[in-house]
Image 1 (cartoon, helix red, strand yellow):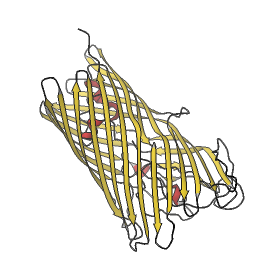
Image 2 (cartoon, one colour):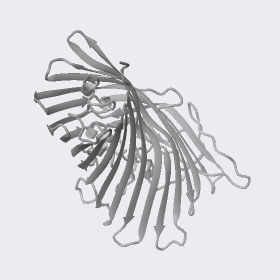
Image 3 (cartoon, one colour):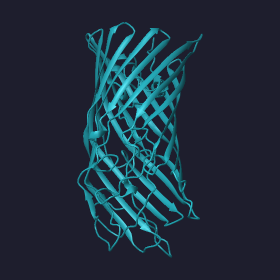
Length: 468
């Protein structure tokens, strides 16, 4: 799941009409509203963006802080263990972590996961002239799957079809930016719908007693109503405006994984997610209260290069009721790019976009190289066994290195902890998990930004019971 946040800076624009589908806006009797669509995918927590003539406007900058690894999977059980699940993936969420883990499934399974997210961010510059508070919250479907085990002679395994919302924009956000010399603060109200969705077909098989292999084929399919998002943003106070954007992508990539058990109760896992270039459709529009003009333009020539990732993990079960795990993941954001990105004209008469960028880093939208991200995750699970029920208890810790450099040229690293619990009643497993992540770093103006992310995950897994 991905939280919906975007930059707060803004600029004027003129009217333009371009190719493809355009965005429409409601009219006012006395004046029109201004809007500029934004392509945003995550958390606004960065320092002042570069806005020289070679990069898009500050309002366009993308941000994925706190969600920097594409190797993150789904499920309250795994996330309750800090996300240390690459070598322990043995339930219906396995394909989102390590598809080799599907080979552990012995019965048909159905899985449903939902998420509730929130972010609190604040920023104050060194002179305390400009302050900003940022609050967001949202709910979204996170994962849905159906798995069926099979056997072919000595080979056993399972096949699975699944849906995962890799980046979610469902939710609302409120930003309040105050300048001490100005009487009225600038307030942004944002509403997002949809996200970037992955439909996957995967399988995991047990090759030998010690070795399991798996693969998933992931379709990021733009079918007209899934795998895309819509943003609407209203700016109140100084220079009021209304803004809209639409962004859809389509493409294919794969996950390849293996789990090796050199000794009983010890698993070693490895997974790789291939990079891919997605076809994107971007529509942007804006209207101004202060100017009787509109901007609207769309293009299907945008291309998005999403990074690959690799991860390794180990999981040890010293006794049947206790599991401890650790993972390391690296995502190659230094190679992520967006091609043919455009901005709307900032002044003048109606015309097509005045700036089309053939190649920019993604998601920072600059020509500078980004950093690869990495995560270290640790987790444990203890199962309390009662007369009729089983109660899994979980906890975890992780560190998350970001893809950007702070104002002092350091690379921020966020830290987090997780708690989780579940209950197994017959064929049904209910799980819940809480994830809290915090970080702070210097901005480019001598101030600091503080961030707190909190997420709740809820899972339901049904394991079909065979008839006697």
